Length: 186
Image (tube, rainbow, N blue to C red; front, side, top):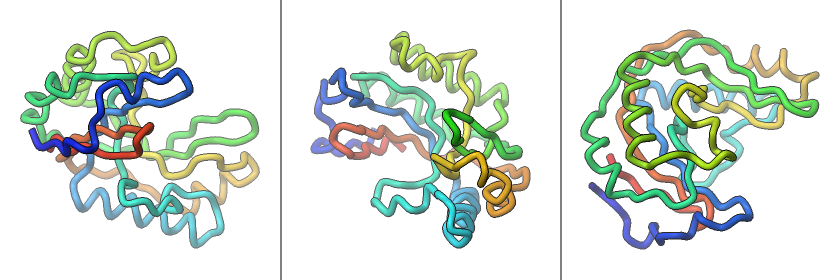
């Protein structure tokens, strides 16, 4: 397991004010490039885009689990299960309050579902606020843009111009939202 000791402080994500730690899988280079190109097309169209976040840690990913204080050691062996085939479908929308998150749909294959279940088992049950990442409730996706006004959805879908794609999940990382750091497991 490759961890950056400075990036992991046990308990930092256990704050009740929204601090969280996400377990994320990363796509192969070709899939990453396709997602980043879609981010750029959104920017070029003057729309919200995940590409507007220019921090070093920002990259296309799929959130597998969210917890307050996961035990990283329990995830080490799971990194060895990668790579996995990654099948991406069409555009997926998560509407809320006059706006939506626009995403690239991840098709749940049997190996990806099994990987997800093993991550969830290693971390233990999710708090209710993270139930959307629990097995059987998980909707995997690669975020293209957040806070897209409903009036702009047509333009956003046209701009990202995503087609089905087959690639691989090749990386595994932890994102600590409280300390804003990444720990790479693979």
